Image (cartoon, rainbow, N blue to C red):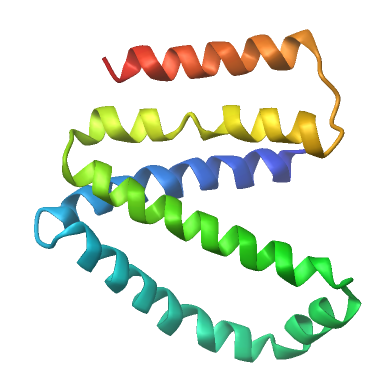
Length: 142
């Protein structure tokens, strides 16, 4: 793995970790639906200027894509936002130290779907790694 990939991965982990921490703090002050809608509103305000500033790149991405590219991007947004909505609901009713690790078992779903629909290779190492990761997350949340 390249160094830049490792750095981005570490920043991703830090971002998700801090995000979950602030999610739990926000749920002490508002209900999950409100937190979801406020989060969405903030994302619109933050990212709309970026999209407009990078208009030519956005336009080029749309023009160079086949017809399924935007459909899959929209699908990703919809199911991800649904996941965030249900994550906030779960987080509001439980301990962050339990809910956050359990919600992090989603790679097992991605692993299975990638094998079934994307034609990615199955290896014993990937399978064992996914089991160990999911099992470890389960035990952390106990």
